[in-house]
Image 1 (tube, rainbow, N blue to C red):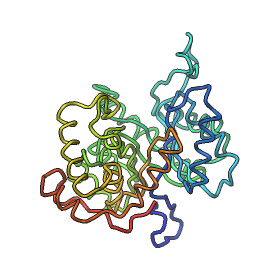
Image 2 (cartoon, helix red, strand yellow; image 1 turned 90 degrees about the vertical axis):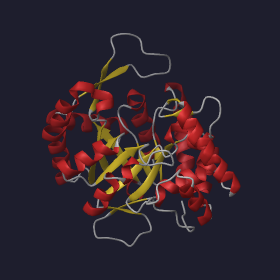
Image 3 (cartoon, helix red, strand yellow; image 1 turned 180 degrees about the vertical axis):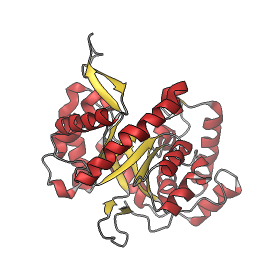
Length: 335
């Protein structure tokens, strides 16, 4: 069972802080010291949940996370990584600053166990708290999606259950973009949690229809990665604003401008509204962001703690920019 840090304790529960640190591929191979220093700064500011994956930087994400975290007392922090993409050496030269590996998909039973062992070695740690099945969705697999889903449930899922029974992971989950895919996995297996990438934000609400109510019914926790939709909800509708790692399309830019206008009327930073909206849903235990600087760490912590007026949410709903049934943040939300 996974709960929010600060909620009433439950026997054997894993508590996650409201803000998580995403160990993506934001630094290249020559920036290990910078990456470790930034993660250390976040740790010193109070961050205690860190997420990574073999896919991030083709191994760099796990190397950087391990270099910083294995110097810390292991019981003080929560760490998650993922299975489903394994790494193999490249036969040609990698891009400058990148690791000399390529990834390939492997959701088999044995492949998952090997992937998990490889992650432990890259991290330099003996255990991981949460292991996620990574990116089993139509976006990545196209016509092979059904085959991959079956492989994941018949292979990787059974391997994760074994790892949990052996105590080398405390919880298992699924990490994908797409609330519909998460809901399918929630009905197919006994998962502890789900990492929904950008799927419940000020701009993305489909998770309210089925997935989030299902998690509430099943008592499953949700971690939302990319609560700013990879940039635009932090920067606003500026030139070059990014939405799901691509230039934001016109309709997203226009909706963001309308949300920004409401926020300005209530003197609320767009990023604060975005972060607190995501965290307001009762099943969302944590929001995970990637960080490039100390200023971003400080800003997100301030945004998460900033009291916001209830009138902000009333107007966003009146303007039909948010669904009427969306839970609203409490004024006492803290990082």
